[in-house]
Length: 441
Image (cartoon, rainbow, N blue to C red; front, side, top):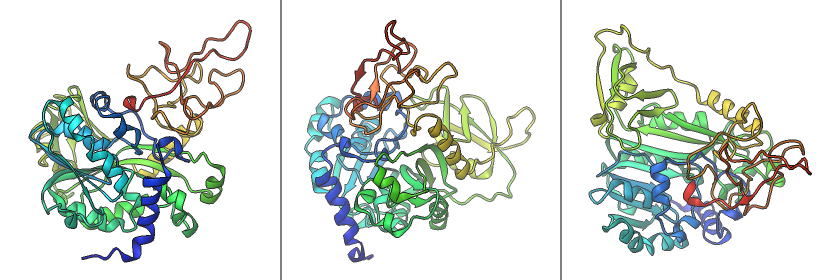
């Protein structure tokens, strides 16, 4: 059994930061734990039903909660206050199960004491439990080999002092065809010791960020199929002192999908895959990753690796996959976009949006700085986010100066998030600032 002795300093630092230093996400000094686009509308609807105590202590850098998991067994690494577990419990229904693993007593207490109230909301008692343990030692926490269909994690693996041990444990826990669907923080270069050991940078998911190339090689070496990227967003460091420490390094929130399927023989002939629908929320199309979006009822060419994933236990019932007899009239198989290029694109988008690629600051329209209209429930980051929904612009621009952290977003008008109307007596725009709610994120 692996020893945790050499890692005690890291565990103590993380426990203290999340258990005692942070009261809520308003105390964060970077956008790492509030980054990411808005979740799917189905997930947002569930979040609204989760007790406030659970939502208020949520820290995450993405939305790693897949749909179409009814009846499945789900594991959450570093479950914290339990928000993602509560969402997953609603998605798996009464026949599925959700287990959260965390090492922070204060977070676990919040997660456990709200289960009954959530069960009343659902109308049944969910198979939802939270266990004390380390994500590097899942078997010691009662997670048996080949017992999990989907493992999720939200900005936690970076906190581990032994990430390879975490991935190996997940691989062992997954059933054949299972997947690790998770969001985390990554760096575009190796980080110096001063960054990796800094208590605040470690706690805010920056100090432990893996170099993307190192992570992808590690995952394949353990036995996962080629990592698939679902989303990439640049992370802003708002504290000047911390920015000075990290220097030129850039950080990103990336949602990856790692599948436990046999390594595909790329010398095999081509395949044809057709999404047949059936996943609630993805009636018209299904996004496997940034390069593969399947329109319902439309067959497309795929390579052997993608065919293996689509034939996996969870996705097989939604896809028809067969060897290609002919490719006439079919869309060619998609090539793989490198993670480095995706990060470069995210950074450029961030630079044009004031430092964030979260849904709170979408790309500017050609007519001004206001984003297009989003879902009715909102496009903002959690209410205590330290970044502002409307970055500071010149006096003649349509976005206001940064407001205090409790007012992160401008009141939405019919045209989008910002009110671009200018006063007849003042060149500054008229804006009504409102605090955002976690249930919109």
